[in-house]
Image (tube, rainbow, N blue to C red; front, top):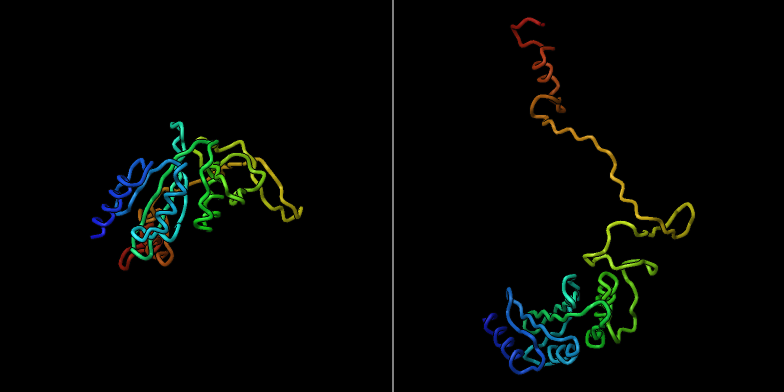
Length: 213
């Protein structure tokens, strides 16, 4: 029943809505791909059309494919509480072309768009609060890009002694640790409560009727 309804919605989107690149059902969810310039009309229709009724934007995330010219997928996960169905809308972009903001359709999108900008560097046109949200304002780069270096950047922390925020080079220190891989069940170690049995095995305490060593 659910799969048939989603299939009908996918067919309607693919045949009647212009500029839809693809529409189908994947793992029980409606998945739609479109061009970023057509994103806003599509989102308004998905929210307001009773056949879709996707009232909520659950989240927005990025996916990085460095080998592509438009390396980023921007993924919108929508939920219809009325019809108990989900939809995933996907658009692509590069490092400089902005994606239209959907914050006027779903105000909560501001948080997700700021996160996508902070971690991937995706720009959103029309977003009035385009600031970093998880890293510091002076942070360089975008940590979730696959070509982001693991070393060579600075980290920020609050120094209690100096009572101020300080910037320091990233230090990835691996302390020396000595691992003991011998299993205690092999008799090389005395477990709590097993002291007498250990002494017996070592000959320190003899069994009844046996002479001490």
